Length: 243
Image 1 (tube, one colour):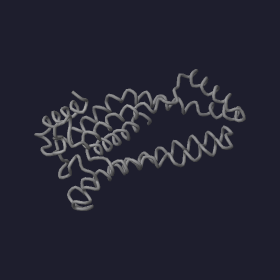
Image 2 (image 1 turned 45 degrees about the horizontal axis):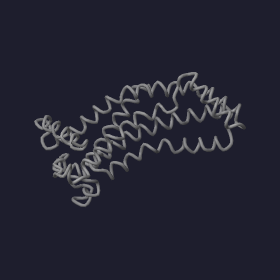
Image 3 (image 1 turned 180 degrees about the vertical axis):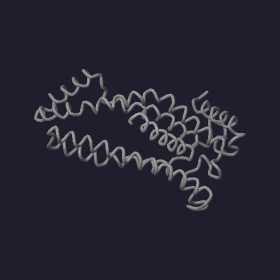
Image 4 (image 1 turned 90 degrees about the horizontal axis):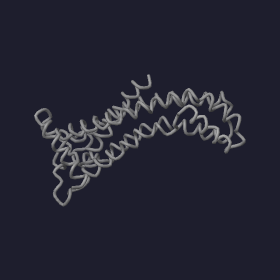
């Protein structure tokens, strides 16, 4: 039995349990519930990532000093930075783990709601809807059948509204964090090509949140629900963990 068959049965069973409350949208509610369960499982890593980010923020003045001291010797700077992080037990990559561990769940939903068959049989998940919008459909399908203000188009409009609100919150927070990091870099005397690269990344980073809108527009609605739910969870989680 493949992982797709197991996952499809899990979604179907959750939908059956939620059907008395959500009726035709029970499978959509099941996806939201499964997303929340995934985020709960990843939450300990998110807490560890938050602790790591606070530790890295505390190290910024020392990092800036090392960059100033060894700006003409990249290899010595690299070793000094590695030694500093090892001494303080801080991993520069700890913040990536929560996102990386969620990727398989998103890929799985994408495959489940993009395939007409599962293990040689018809994919019954494609019969489910969120209100009037098929979970296997995409935004372009909604536009082709009713347009922006059609029944399915309004479902996507609601999702875009949620994602935009979350993206604005993330944009403001990221812009504030990158501005603080840039100020420390200047105070530490960073210059040259490295400073230019950091400045370019800092300018781009706040806008990365809005790429979620592109994801919602191009993936099946089921995967878009995962993206929207996970993005909203992340915004609330970061507000709590990084306050």
